[in-house]
Length: 66
Image (cartoon, rainbow, N blue to C red; front, side):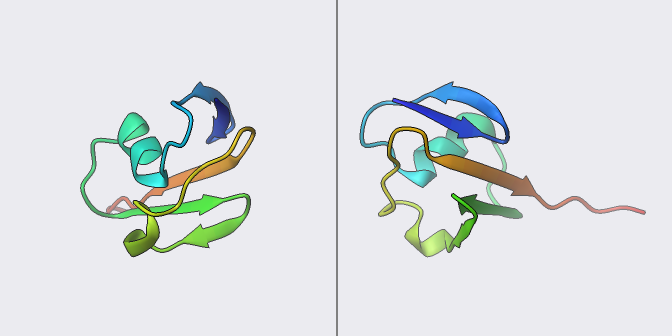
């Protein structure tokens, strides 16, 4: 299925979870926030949140510095 991740089309397996989508774009284990179709998804729900065709994900990574 095709979804949009950070504005870019990405192909994921049917029934992919938010956790799988995050793993496909980031190797970071912490400091990540995700929104699906403009709704924030709590980290505890990533595994159980199934994506659908044409969903829009924003994967944000916190960075330190000034």
